[in-house]
Length: 459
Image 1 (cartoon, rainbow, N blue to C red):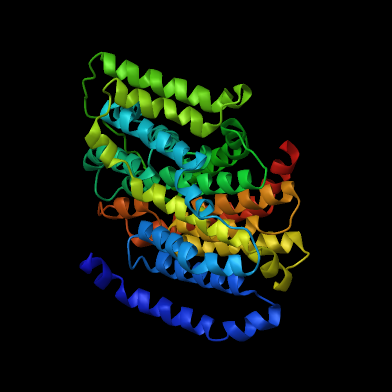
Image 2: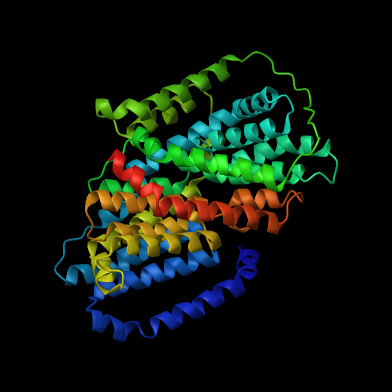
């Protein structure tokens, strides 16, 4: 813990100084725009959470508990004093909500796929099908990374795919740019793949949770309908750009021989649980089952029949679950105090939906570059949901911001997959910056143009 504090100390102090600068005029500003005491406290909690999330001075999931503690002990009395009805359970509810169950189910599916080595078998099969042809191999790696990241941790997918690809790199000449492109393809495709399903990345879960609170229910299949076309476009752009900037020349890849024995009963059971769960997520709504309820099936089945054990349960990424819950709890405070309406009323973009989209999307792209995409979504989406917008407009704006959170990947520290790939020593920061800027620009372009056109057409 102490090394972590020392490592990020300068960044924390810089952001704290900025926070103080922002808070100095806040009192007079609050009087000018008519902020109540509860709204003022919510703003301070929001700024504190943003500072701690951006600085990473303490573990990100601890910020969620700080948010909860401040809401229960500091904010609640002000809300009650203003004559509003509030219950502690409203702040506790996000920590075991439908969305948290959905994500927990996704993490369990990821665990059984990895423990049964099914992810590695699938990835190696993709590489084998491409027959060592550079362009096809690059496409195979991109598709494998994206598909696996739709269902399991993009960090785990990156680590696993690097293990498979690095032996290919060693068989290539050191002066061939294609070897850099192959490694770059892994984190970037993994980052993008999370867009495709509600469980692919935490911002998706945060978005669905807030939309549900506003009476906008999106099924698992509907989310995929909204996002898969743009995921396919982003992957195509990534493939073409990597081949352009990192050509293979006359190089041909040779794959190491890996013997795969017939699937064992536990592997077949893992496949069965995975398929049943995915089908349940896609059609469960027709039978009155929400995604969290369906997620109980893989959780119960995997541990009951012994595919996973207590050590696997302890190894689940609980920090991510609590971080998502903290972001949702922050939104509860913003919604209770009607802070969003006050913010929109004083913004110069008030009344102009296109300008509002531009401002929020650009802010999301910038924040997502320098801080966790989950933290970025946790800050922006609660504000967006509190705006007084028609449901369709609200949905499109949230989809645009969520998409941009997942396409902001310019720096090695922008996402865990970037950091893992950078640590391989094959790629440099300028390689990530080149491709990251391209994908971030693509995300902004989609959010401004074809994204809203398509989303409004299918609503």
